[in-house]
Image (cartoon, rainbow, N blue to C red; front, side):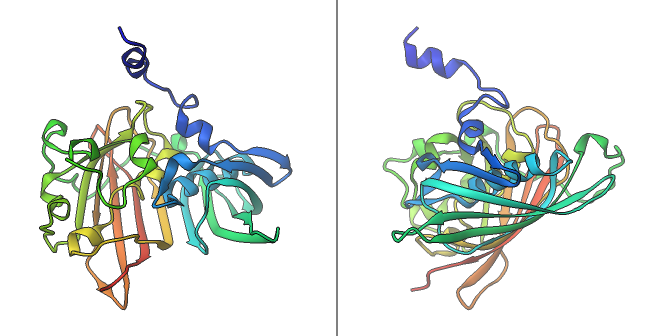
Length: 286
């Protein structure tokens, strides 16, 4: 068997994958962490917001007494670039079932001045300690089987705006939300896909923070092009995901004044809603 095929046959595991290595932070002092942001998670030269949320989420998971993000709200202040960064955390409150903290990711400009890229406020708990009771009217998205969906590798040429992150994801888009790639956007503001990491690593709460912000923007199906930078994103992790591919559904209902909202749902292989998010993003008009 060729070496590349042999490597592809070996699935990465949680804690031992490219995602884990690229989100790992090094504690410099209590509440202060260093990281080298990987260029492997960029979109049009800017570091993906979901990857950055996972970096901050990992730092807060180390700083707080509870292990899992329940809710995390991020304000994206300036575009992050690959390279060295510092994460500063602060514990706001600790309780028996929840702890709350805040964190900022900073980089340095050409003059050596600190520039804050993102600021987050988050509450952490223990997903394994939650009761099993589920009462919901939510339903998983109706999507074709994975082998009837399409990824970046299925196109005749690289999709506009795609970049390094595409090589690290297993992304198979619902054909009903692919009109934009054929020059025929539906106008419905929907995006749906099967989602996973390319190296086969199963999902966990941290990778769910990536999943909510990893699909092409719904703005593409509204007939718009170009970068759609996130202004604010709030993610809720509802359950530890089961092994297997995820399904991600994103919708927008209102584009006004050059901004739109995106509501995301993430479903696991057992049809459990495991994460939700809403973000406000800026779009380029004209």
